[in-house]
Length: 462
Image (cartoon, rainbow, N blue to C red):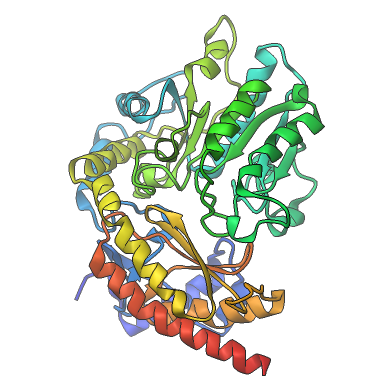
């Protein structure tokens, strides 16, 4: 038995301590008055184990981030080795070898002239930094009114107040209003539910129209994900990104590619911008940069964006104590070695079709309405009526997802995401080392649970 497994007494103590002291994120804490807190104690490859020794297929890479899989002692060891040499020094006016090496390596992998790397501690910080960078850039280049940021509806860009102003999910914004001003939203690329009279080819034009309505002299940046997470893995129509790039160039607006999820192999390329062949002015990144073996994020900026900050007395008036942490940087370098040397990108490219085919095979289940995504980042949208794509009410969605699916999938050994920030979806984003064996396991669990979920909802409606 693994040393991390616990005795019955220890389990009880952990449960009591978790309930009393641990405040979990985005979590209805009252739920754990009636049920156990899921306590994960060990991971290996595509699997994790709870305190009882039960095994789960991690179909979400923890939270879209453990790209190389769990249990890589060699990657963890890189951090330990660095701690012995230099546990910490700041990047505020100082440098250390690992952050220098990592910045150079990222610049080499990034598209085009994205050669400047500003480290953060995570994804929300990266988005916050990119928004602030865009504002200060325009002030330094003689456009002080350019402060607004355009994002897409139902998109998630983070939880800090600036990033939240870009986030297009009403329920996440309302508790914290008033937000930082300047967050604007346009329709997303959900081609499964296009508004009446709108075609996929129209979607990019909403960006142009919003810039024109606001006044180009007031818009600093457009921020979008290559594949949008919120709402369930919305992919871009053909030519969408190229047209958005043209619009940004036309109106002197910076284009931020938010790749907190989509970078580092999630879509089968180093960056989503590579997959969809566009050139952003900035990329925001986190999660897979270390495969979550240590916290880290980054803004990768073009030479053009960086240039005014490199002149005279100018500086980017922004920073985080732990950004570019030497231990995190060492872990990131080791993580990139694994991705590069062990064919991780090639594994995603080689198995993406099999992953998609498995998900497509579920369309014979009456509540499966749509399957969408790219690489190892996919979603299944659940519908009330497959023939009409009728949507669930809010109460029905609550019953479907939280009342049954989330708990049942976990109970049967599959960790995935049952999400209702838009229409209800099941999101699957396994470690990038997964293959046909894991896809078969996912299908073996997911199929009967979705069938049972549909049967339950029909009985409730009868």
